Amino acid sequence: MKKRIEKDSLGEREVTQSVYYGIQTSRAMENFPISGIREHPELIRSIAIVKRAAAEVNVSLGELDFEIGQAIIQAADEIAQGQWHDQFVVDVFQAGAGTSFNMNANEVIANRALEIRGVGRGQYSLCHPNDHVNLGQSTNDVFPTSLRVAATSLTKKLTRELEALTEALEAKAEEFHDVVKPGRTHLQDAVPIRLGQEFAGYAMAVHHGCERLQRAQDALGRMNIGGTAIGTGFSLHPSFHTMIVRRISELANHDFASATSLIEATQSTDDFAEVSSALKLLSLDLIRMANDLRLMSSGPNTGLREINLPPVQPGSSIMPGKVNPVIAEALNMICFQVIGNDATISYACQAGQFEINVMTPVIAFNLTQSLEILCNGIRVFRERCLVGITANEEHCRQLAEQSLGMATVLNRCVGYDEAARIAQESVSTRRSVKEIAVQNGVLSRERAEDLFDPAKLTRPFVIRCRTEPRRKTKDKGKKLH
Image (cartoon, rainbow, N blue to C red):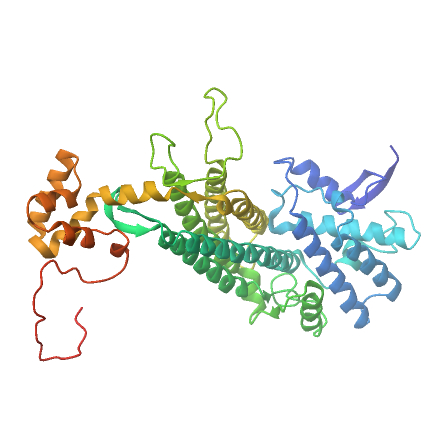
Protein backbone atom coordinates (compact mmCIF):
# COMPACT_ATOMS: atom_id res chain seq x y z
CA MET A 1 0.00 0.00 0.00
CA LYS A 2 1.31 3.40 -0.95
CA LYS A 3 2.14 5.75 1.88
CA ARG A 4 2.58 9.49 2.25
CA ILE A 5 4.58 11.28 4.91
CA GLU A 6 2.76 13.80 7.08
CA LYS A 7 4.04 15.84 10.00
CA ASP A 8 2.57 17.57 13.02
CA SER A 9 3.99 19.18 16.16
CA LEU A 10 5.00 15.76 17.50
CA GLY A 11 6.91 14.65 14.43
CA GLU A 12 6.45 12.70 11.21
CA ARG A 13 4.67 9.47 10.36
CA GLU A 14 3.43 7.49 7.40
CA VAL A 15 -0.24 7.66 6.40
CA THR A 16 -1.87 5.36 3.86
CA GLN A 17 -2.11 7.30 0.61
CA SER A 18 -5.67 6.13 -0.19
CA VAL A 19 -7.31 7.64 2.91
CA TYR A 20 -8.53 11.20 3.29
CA TYR A 21 -7.72 11.52 6.96
CA GLY A 22 -4.21 12.44 8.08
CA ILE A 23 -1.62 12.24 10.81
CA GLN A 24 -3.67 13.50 13.75
CA THR A 25 -6.52 11.12 12.97
CA SER A 26 -3.99 8.27 12.68
CA ARG A 27 -2.62 9.10 16.12
CA ALA A 28 -6.16 9.13 17.54
CA MET A 29 -6.85 5.70 16.05
CA GLU A 30 -3.79 4.34 17.84
CA ASN A 31 -4.55 6.15 21.10
CA PHE A 32 -8.22 5.23 21.37
CA PRO A 33 -8.94 1.66 20.24
CA ILE A 34 -11.75 1.56 22.80
CA SER A 35 -15.22 0.62 21.59
CA GLY A 36 -15.08 0.31 17.84
CA ILE A 37 -18.04 2.72 17.74
CA ARG A 38 -17.73 5.73 15.46
CA GLU A 39 -19.53 9.03 15.64
CA HIS A 40 -23.20 9.17 14.71
CA PRO A 41 -23.79 9.95 11.00
CA GLU A 42 -25.89 12.95 11.97
CA LEU A 43 -22.96 14.40 13.92
CA ILE A 44 -20.68 13.87 10.92
CA ARG A 45 -23.21 15.60 8.70
CA SER A 46 -23.53 18.45 11.19
CA ILE A 47 -19.81 19.14 11.53
CA ALA A 48 -19.63 19.25 7.73
CA ILE A 49 -22.37 21.89 7.75
CA VAL A 50 -20.39 23.92 10.29
CA LYS A 51 -17.20 23.62 8.23
CA ARG A 52 -18.98 24.67 5.05
CA ALA A 53 -20.59 27.64 6.78
CA ALA A 54 -17.22 28.70 8.21
CA ALA A 55 -15.57 28.56 4.79
CA GLU A 56 -18.33 30.60 3.19
CA VAL A 57 -18.15 33.27 5.88
CA ASN A 58 -14.35 33.41 5.78
CA VAL A 59 -14.38 33.84 2.00
CA SER A 60 -16.99 36.61 2.20
CA LEU A 61 -14.95 38.39 4.89
CA GLY A 62 -11.78 38.14 2.82
CA GLU A 63 -10.13 35.89 5.37
CA LEU A 64 -9.87 32.86 3.05
CA ASP A 65 -8.72 32.57 -0.57
CA PHE A 66 -11.71 32.11 -2.89
CA GLU A 67 -10.43 28.99 -4.70
CA ILE A 68 -9.39 27.26 -1.48
CA GLY A 69 -12.70 28.20 0.08
CA GLN A 70 -14.71 26.83 -2.83
CA ALA A 71 -12.88 23.49 -2.65
CA ILE A 72 -13.51 23.30 1.11
CA ILE A 73 -17.19 24.14 0.57
CA GLN A 74 -17.57 21.38 -2.03
CA ALA A 75 -15.77 18.82 0.12
CA ALA A 76 -17.84 19.70 3.19
CA ASP A 77 -21.04 19.61 1.16
CA GLU A 78 -20.21 16.13 -0.10
CA ILE A 79 -19.83 14.94 3.50
CA ALA A 80 -23.08 16.64 4.50
CA GLN A 81 -24.76 14.72 1.67
CA GLY A 82 -23.47 11.40 3.04
CA GLN A 83 -20.18 10.85 1.20
CA TRP A 84 -16.86 9.92 2.82
CA HIS A 85 -18.40 8.96 6.18
CA ASP A 86 -16.17 5.88 6.15
CA GLN A 87 -13.22 8.25 6.60
CA PHE A 88 -14.47 9.33 10.03
CA VAL A 89 -12.69 6.65 12.01
CA VAL A 90 -12.10 8.12 15.48
CA ASP A 91 -13.66 6.19 18.36
CA VAL A 92 -16.46 7.92 20.30
CA PHE A 93 -14.31 7.56 23.43
CA GLN A 94 -11.52 9.91 22.44
CA ALA A 95 -9.55 12.98 23.37
CA GLY A 96 -11.37 15.41 25.61
CA ALA A 97 -13.53 18.13 24.05
CA GLY A 98 -13.63 16.25 20.72
CA THR A 99 -10.36 17.51 19.29
CA SER A 100 -9.71 14.21 17.52
CA PHE A 101 -13.10 14.25 15.82
CA ASN A 102 -12.69 17.89 14.79
CA MET A 103 -9.27 17.16 13.32
CA ASN A 104 -10.62 14.06 11.60
CA ALA A 105 -13.13 16.35 9.87
CA ASN A 106 -10.49 18.99 9.12
CA GLU A 107 -8.13 16.45 7.54
CA VAL A 108 -10.78 14.68 5.47
CA ILE A 109 -12.10 18.00 4.14
CA ALA A 110 -8.60 19.33 3.46
CA ASN A 111 -7.48 16.26 1.52
CA ARG A 112 -10.71 16.03 -0.43
CA ALA A 113 -10.40 19.76 -1.21
CA LEU A 114 -6.86 19.16 -2.48
CA GLU A 115 -8.16 16.37 -4.68
CA ILE A 116 -10.89 18.66 -6.03
CA ARG A 117 -8.16 21.16 -6.95
CA GLY A 118 -6.19 18.43 -8.71
CA VAL A 119 -3.47 18.22 -6.06
CA GLY A 120 -2.23 15.15 -4.22
CA ARG A 121 -3.37 14.40 -0.70
CA GLY A 122 -1.17 15.70 2.07
CA GLN A 123 -0.02 18.81 0.15
CA TYR A 124 -1.20 20.99 3.00
CA SER A 125 0.57 24.15 1.90
CA LEU A 126 -2.26 24.53 -0.61
CA CYS A 127 -5.08 23.62 1.79
CA HIS A 128 -4.25 23.04 5.44
CA PRO A 129 -6.54 21.27 7.96
CA ASN A 130 -5.89 23.90 10.63
CA ASP A 131 -4.98 27.06 8.72
CA HIS A 132 -7.77 26.84 6.16
CA VAL A 133 -10.49 24.31 7.08
CA ASN A 134 -10.42 25.21 10.79
CA LEU A 135 -9.95 28.95 10.16
CA GLY A 136 -11.79 31.05 12.75
CA GLN A 137 -12.73 28.00 14.78
CA SER A 138 -11.75 25.92 17.78
CA THR A 139 -12.82 22.43 18.76
CA ASN A 140 -14.36 24.12 21.79
CA ASP A 141 -16.96 25.93 19.70
CA VAL A 142 -17.13 23.59 16.68
CA PHE A 143 -17.92 20.39 18.57
CA PRO A 144 -20.75 21.76 20.77
CA THR A 145 -22.20 23.60 17.78
CA SER A 146 -22.13 20.45 15.66
CA LEU A 147 -23.82 18.54 18.46
CA ARG A 148 -26.54 21.19 18.70
CA VAL A 149 -27.24 20.83 14.99
CA ALA A 150 -27.22 17.03 15.15
CA ALA A 151 -29.34 16.81 18.29
CA THR A 152 -31.86 19.26 16.86
CA SER A 153 -32.25 17.18 13.71
CA LEU A 154 -32.64 13.95 15.68
CA THR A 155 -35.06 15.60 18.10
CA LYS A 156 -37.29 16.66 15.21
CA LYS A 157 -37.40 13.05 13.97
CA LEU A 158 -38.24 11.78 17.44
CA THR A 159 -40.94 14.43 17.84
CA ARG A 160 -42.62 13.20 14.66
CA GLU A 161 -42.59 9.64 15.99
CA LEU A 162 -44.05 10.77 19.32
CA GLU A 163 -46.85 12.59 17.53
CA ALA A 164 -47.59 9.45 15.50
CA LEU A 165 -47.55 7.35 18.69
CA THR A 166 -49.96 9.76 20.38
CA GLU A 167 -52.35 9.52 17.44
CA ALA A 168 -52.16 5.72 17.44
CA LEU A 169 -52.88 5.58 21.18
CA GLU A 170 -55.82 7.95 20.75
CA ALA A 171 -57.18 5.72 17.99
CA LYS A 172 -56.98 2.72 20.32
CA ALA A 173 -58.69 4.74 23.05
CA GLU A 174 -61.58 5.32 20.67
CA GLU A 175 -61.62 1.69 19.54
CA PHE A 176 -61.72 0.41 23.13
CA HIS A 177 -64.17 3.02 24.40
CA ASP A 178 -66.87 0.47 25.34
CA VAL A 179 -64.53 -2.18 26.77
CA VAL A 180 -65.05 -2.21 30.56
CA LYS A 181 -62.45 -3.93 32.72
CA PRO A 182 -61.36 -3.92 36.35
CA GLY A 183 -59.13 -1.11 37.48
CA ARG A 184 -56.20 -2.07 39.67
CA THR A 185 -54.23 -0.25 42.34
CA HIS A 186 -51.30 -1.92 44.10
CA LEU A 187 -51.95 -4.75 41.57
CA GLN A 188 -55.17 -5.46 43.49
CA ASP A 189 -58.82 -5.07 42.48
CA ALA A 190 -60.12 -1.51 42.20
CA VAL A 191 -63.20 0.15 40.73
CA PRO A 192 -63.88 -0.45 37.00
CA ILE A 193 -62.29 1.49 34.18
CA ARG A 194 -62.71 1.45 30.42
CA LEU A 195 -59.80 0.08 28.41
CA GLY A 196 -60.19 3.15 26.23
CA GLN A 197 -59.68 5.38 29.26
CA GLU A 198 -56.40 3.64 30.01
CA PHE A 199 -55.17 4.12 26.46
CA ALA A 200 -56.28 7.75 26.53
CA GLY A 201 -54.13 8.16 29.63
CA TYR A 202 -51.14 6.67 27.80
CA ALA A 203 -51.74 9.05 24.88
CA MET A 204 -51.76 12.07 27.20
CA ALA A 205 -48.53 10.95 28.89
CA VAL A 206 -46.77 10.65 25.53
CA HIS A 207 -48.17 14.03 24.47
CA HIS A 208 -46.78 15.64 27.62
CA GLY A 209 -43.43 13.96 26.99
CA CYS A 210 -43.39 15.35 23.47
CA GLU A 211 -44.13 18.86 24.73
CA ARG A 212 -41.37 18.56 27.32
CA LEU A 213 -38.91 17.49 24.61
CA GLN A 214 -39.89 20.38 22.36
CA ARG A 215 -39.28 22.85 25.19
CA ALA A 216 -35.87 21.32 25.80
CA GLN A 217 -35.08 21.48 22.09
CA ASP A 218 -35.43 25.25 22.17
CA ALA A 219 -32.35 25.43 24.39
CA LEU A 220 -30.28 23.67 21.72
CA GLY A 221 -30.62 26.71 19.50
CA ARG A 222 -28.12 28.79 21.52
CA MET A 223 -24.84 28.57 19.62
CA ASN A 224 -21.36 29.39 20.86
CA ILE A 225 -19.69 29.16 17.45
CA GLY A 226 -17.41 32.14 17.11
CA GLY A 227 -16.34 31.96 20.71
CA THR A 228 -13.23 30.02 19.60
CA ALA A 229 -11.15 28.56 22.43
CA ILE A 230 -12.89 29.88 25.57
CA GLY A 231 -15.80 32.01 24.40
CA THR A 232 -13.95 35.31 24.01
CA GLY A 233 -13.71 35.10 20.22
CA PHE A 234 -9.94 35.46 20.37
CA SER A 235 -8.28 36.06 16.94
CA LEU A 236 -11.64 36.19 15.16
CA HIS A 237 -13.20 38.69 12.77
CA PRO A 238 -15.91 40.57 14.74
CA SER A 239 -18.62 39.76 12.17
CA PHE A 240 -17.83 36.05 11.98
CA HIS A 241 -20.10 34.88 14.82
CA THR A 242 -23.30 36.53 13.61
CA MET A 243 -22.71 35.54 9.99
CA ILE A 244 -21.92 31.87 10.67
CA VAL A 245 -24.92 31.38 12.95
CA ARG A 246 -27.13 32.77 10.20
CA ARG A 247 -25.53 30.50 7.58
CA ILE A 248 -25.72 27.37 9.72
CA SER A 249 -29.41 28.10 10.25
CA GLU A 250 -29.92 28.23 6.49
CA LEU A 251 -27.95 25.06 5.78
CA ALA A 252 -29.55 23.08 8.63
CA ASN A 253 -33.04 24.45 7.93
CA HIS A 254 -33.52 25.50 11.54
CA ASP A 255 -33.57 28.89 13.22
CA PHE A 256 -30.49 28.85 15.47
CA ALA A 257 -29.45 31.91 17.47
CA SER A 258 -26.38 33.39 19.10
CA ALA A 259 -25.92 32.48 22.73
CA THR A 260 -26.40 35.46 25.04
CA SER A 261 -23.00 34.72 26.52
CA LEU A 262 -20.49 32.83 24.39
CA ILE A 263 -18.40 32.26 27.50
CA GLU A 264 -21.25 30.60 29.40
CA ALA A 265 -22.27 28.58 26.33
CA THR A 266 -18.67 27.35 25.99
CA GLN A 267 -18.37 26.46 29.67
CA SER A 268 -21.77 24.84 30.18
CA THR A 269 -23.32 21.74 28.64
CA ASP A 270 -26.58 22.03 30.57
CA ASP A 271 -28.65 22.36 27.38
CA PHE A 272 -27.69 18.82 26.41
CA ALA A 273 -28.55 17.61 29.90
CA GLU A 274 -31.97 19.25 29.60
CA VAL A 275 -32.75 17.31 26.42
CA SER A 276 -31.46 14.10 27.97
CA SER A 277 -33.61 14.68 31.04
CA ALA A 278 -36.69 15.05 28.83
CA LEU A 279 -35.79 11.75 27.16
CA LYS A 280 -35.39 10.08 30.55
CA LEU A 281 -38.80 11.28 31.76
CA LEU A 282 -40.37 10.15 28.50
CA SER A 283 -38.72 6.75 28.93
CA LEU A 284 -40.20 6.36 32.41
CA ASP A 285 -43.71 6.75 30.97
CA LEU A 286 -42.97 4.42 28.07
CA ILE A 287 -41.70 1.75 30.47
CA ARG A 288 -44.84 2.06 32.56
CA MET A 289 -47.06 1.75 29.48
CA ALA A 290 -45.13 -1.22 28.07
CA ASN A 291 -45.30 -3.00 31.41
CA ASP A 292 -49.06 -2.45 31.62
CA LEU A 293 -49.51 -3.96 28.17
CA ARG A 294 -47.36 -6.95 29.07
CA LEU A 295 -49.43 -7.56 32.19
CA MET A 296 -52.78 -7.08 30.45
CA SER A 297 -51.75 -9.57 27.75
CA SER A 298 -50.30 -12.10 30.20
CA GLY A 299 -51.34 -15.72 29.86
CA PRO A 300 -52.97 -16.65 27.64
CA ASN A 301 -54.42 -19.35 29.90
CA THR A 302 -53.05 -18.40 33.31
CA GLY A 303 -52.75 -14.60 33.16
CA LEU A 304 -55.00 -11.56 32.86
CA ARG A 305 -55.67 -12.01 29.12
CA GLU A 306 -57.51 -8.70 28.82
CA ILE A 307 -55.80 -7.82 25.55
CA ASN A 308 -53.92 -9.64 22.81
CA LEU A 309 -50.62 -8.36 21.46
CA PRO A 310 -49.88 -9.26 17.84
CA PRO A 311 -47.65 -12.36 17.61
CA VAL A 312 -44.46 -11.47 15.75
CA GLN A 313 -42.16 -14.42 16.48
CA PRO A 314 -42.02 -17.70 18.43
CA GLY A 315 -41.19 -17.04 22.04
CA SER A 316 -39.30 -20.10 23.21
CA SER A 317 -36.68 -22.51 21.95
CA ILE A 318 -38.09 -25.28 24.13
CA MET A 319 -41.78 -24.52 24.87
CA PRO A 320 -43.87 -25.06 21.70
CA GLY A 321 -46.51 -22.48 20.87
CA LYS A 322 -45.21 -19.90 23.31
CA VAL A 323 -45.44 -16.29 22.09
CA ASN A 324 -43.86 -13.49 24.11
CA PRO A 325 -44.49 -9.71 24.19
CA VAL A 326 -41.10 -9.11 22.56
CA ILE A 327 -41.79 -5.67 21.07
CA ALA A 328 -42.86 -4.27 24.44
CA GLU A 329 -39.82 -5.92 26.03
CA ALA A 330 -37.53 -4.32 23.45
CA LEU A 331 -39.07 -0.91 24.16
CA ASN A 332 -38.34 -1.45 27.85
CA MET A 333 -34.70 -2.23 27.18
CA ILE A 334 -34.34 0.82 24.94
CA CYS A 335 -35.74 3.01 27.70
CA PHE A 336 -33.42 1.45 30.28
CA GLN A 337 -30.50 2.38 28.02
CA VAL A 338 -31.76 5.96 27.69
CA ILE A 339 -32.00 6.27 31.48
CA GLY A 340 -28.43 5.01 31.80
CA ASN A 341 -27.29 7.42 29.10
CA ASP A 342 -28.89 10.26 31.03
CA ALA A 343 -26.87 9.32 34.12
CA THR A 344 -23.68 9.40 32.04
CA ILE A 345 -24.59 12.77 30.56
CA SER A 346 -25.33 14.14 34.02
CA TYR A 347 -21.93 13.07 35.34
CA ALA A 348 -20.23 14.48 32.24
CA CYS A 349 -22.01 17.83 32.48
CA GLN A 350 -20.84 18.48 36.02
CA ALA A 351 -17.27 17.44 35.16
CA GLY A 352 -16.34 20.57 33.23
CA GLN A 353 -13.72 22.83 34.74
CA PHE A 354 -13.18 26.52 34.17
CA GLU A 355 -13.66 27.59 30.53
CA ILE A 356 -14.76 24.36 28.78
CA ASN A 357 -16.22 20.94 29.43
CA VAL A 358 -13.83 18.35 28.04
CA MET A 359 -16.42 15.58 28.41
CA THR A 360 -18.49 16.63 25.39
CA PRO A 361 -17.56 13.52 23.34
CA VAL A 362 -19.27 11.18 25.79
CA ILE A 363 -22.21 13.60 26.00
CA ALA A 364 -22.49 13.53 22.21
CA PHE A 365 -22.33 9.74 22.01
CA ASN A 366 -24.97 9.15 24.66
CA LEU A 367 -27.33 11.90 23.55
CA THR A 368 -27.32 10.94 19.87
CA GLN A 369 -27.74 7.29 20.80
CA SER A 370 -30.70 8.04 23.06
CA LEU A 371 -32.42 10.09 20.37
CA GLU A 372 -31.75 7.46 17.71
CA ILE A 373 -32.85 4.35 19.58
CA LEU A 374 -35.95 6.02 21.03
CA CYS A 375 -37.01 7.19 17.59
CA ASN A 376 -36.53 3.74 16.06
CA GLY A 377 -37.92 1.87 19.05
CA ILE A 378 -41.10 3.94 19.22
CA ARG A 379 -41.70 3.46 15.49
CA VAL A 380 -41.28 -0.31 15.78
CA PHE A 381 -43.53 -0.43 18.85
CA ARG A 382 -46.26 1.52 17.09
CA GLU A 383 -46.10 -0.42 13.83
CA ARG A 384 -45.50 -3.96 15.11
CA CYS A 385 -47.33 -3.93 18.43
CA LEU A 386 -49.69 -1.09 19.23
CA VAL A 387 -51.78 -0.94 16.06
CA GLY A 388 -52.42 -4.69 16.21
CA ILE A 389 -53.65 -4.88 19.81
CA THR A 390 -57.11 -6.39 20.26
CA ALA A 391 -59.31 -6.60 23.35
CA ASN A 392 -61.04 -9.61 24.91
CA GLU A 393 -64.15 -7.58 25.66
CA GLU A 394 -66.37 -10.22 27.26
CA HIS A 395 -63.55 -11.51 29.45
CA CYS A 396 -62.77 -7.94 30.57
CA ARG A 397 -66.38 -7.38 31.58
CA GLN A 398 -66.52 -10.64 33.54
CA LEU A 399 -63.39 -9.66 35.42
CA ALA A 400 -64.87 -6.24 36.18
CA GLU A 401 -68.05 -7.78 37.59
CA GLN A 402 -66.01 -10.12 39.79
CA SER A 403 -63.67 -7.36 41.01
CA LEU A 404 -63.56 -6.76 44.74
CA GLY A 405 -63.46 -3.07 43.92
CA MET A 406 -67.20 -3.29 43.21
CA ALA A 407 -67.73 -3.23 46.98
CA THR A 408 -67.11 0.52 46.76
CA VAL A 409 -70.66 0.83 45.42
CA LEU A 410 -71.97 -0.13 48.86
CA ASN A 411 -70.24 2.67 50.79
CA ARG A 412 -73.26 4.98 50.49
CA CYS A 413 -75.67 2.11 51.16
CA VAL A 414 -74.35 0.40 54.27
CA GLY A 415 -71.21 2.35 55.20
CA TYR A 416 -67.53 1.51 54.76
CA ASP A 417 -67.30 -1.10 57.53
CA GLU A 418 -70.28 -3.18 56.39
CA ALA A 419 -69.13 -2.89 52.77
CA ALA A 420 -65.72 -4.21 53.86
CA ARG A 421 -67.39 -7.15 55.58
CA ILE A 422 -69.32 -7.99 52.40
CA ALA A 423 -66.07 -7.71 50.43
CA GLN A 424 -64.37 -10.15 52.78
CA GLU A 425 -67.28 -12.55 52.41
CA SER A 426 -66.90 -12.26 48.63
CA VAL A 427 -63.26 -13.29 48.88
CA SER A 428 -63.96 -16.25 51.16
CA THR A 429 -67.00 -17.56 49.28
CA ARG A 430 -65.88 -16.71 45.75
CA ARG A 431 -69.24 -15.04 45.10
CA SER A 432 -69.59 -11.57 43.67
CA VAL A 433 -70.20 -8.53 45.86
CA LYS A 434 -73.44 -7.87 43.98
CA GLU A 435 -74.74 -11.36 44.68
CA ILE A 436 -73.99 -11.11 48.40
CA ALA A 437 -75.57 -7.64 48.63
CA VAL A 438 -78.81 -8.94 47.11
CA GLN A 439 -78.81 -12.10 49.23
CA ASN A 440 -78.29 -10.09 52.43
CA GLY A 441 -81.15 -7.77 51.56
CA VAL A 442 -78.96 -4.71 51.17
CA LEU A 443 -80.25 -4.12 47.64
CA SER A 444 -83.10 -5.37 45.51
CA ARG A 445 -82.16 -7.40 42.47
CA GLU A 446 -83.33 -4.61 40.15
CA ARG A 447 -81.47 -1.90 42.04
CA ALA A 448 -78.32 -4.04 42.21
CA GLU A 449 -78.34 -4.61 38.46
CA ASP A 450 -78.49 -0.85 37.96
CA LEU A 451 -75.88 0.15 40.56
CA PHE A 452 -73.39 -2.58 39.72
CA ASP A 453 -73.33 -1.90 35.99
CA PRO A 454 -69.54 -1.65 35.41
CA ALA A 455 -69.95 0.75 32.49
CA LYS A 456 -71.78 3.26 34.67
CA LEU A 457 -69.07 3.04 37.30
CA THR A 458 -66.46 4.33 34.85
CA ARG A 459 -68.18 7.73 34.80
CA PRO A 460 -68.37 10.24 37.67
CA PHE A 461 -71.78 10.21 39.36
CA VAL A 462 -73.22 10.07 42.87
CA ILE A 463 -74.36 6.63 43.99
CA ARG A 464 -77.65 6.81 45.89
CA CYS A 465 -78.76 3.48 47.26
CA ARG A 466 -82.03 4.74 48.79
CA THR A 467 -84.52 7.40 47.80
CA GLU A 468 -83.83 10.33 50.11
CA PRO A 469 -84.60 14.07 49.92
CA ARG A 470 -81.80 16.41 48.97
CA ARG A 471 -80.43 18.46 51.85
CA LYS A 472 -81.06 22.18 51.70
CA THR A 473 -78.07 24.44 52.12
CA LYS A 474 -77.77 28.12 52.83
CA ASP A 475 -74.90 28.32 50.36
CA LYS A 476 -77.09 27.65 47.38
CA GLY A 477 -75.12 27.03 44.22
CA LYS A 478 -71.78 26.71 46.04
CA LYS A 479 -69.66 23.77 44.98
CA LEU A 480 -68.90 21.32 47.75
CA HIS A 481 -65.58 19.51 47.54
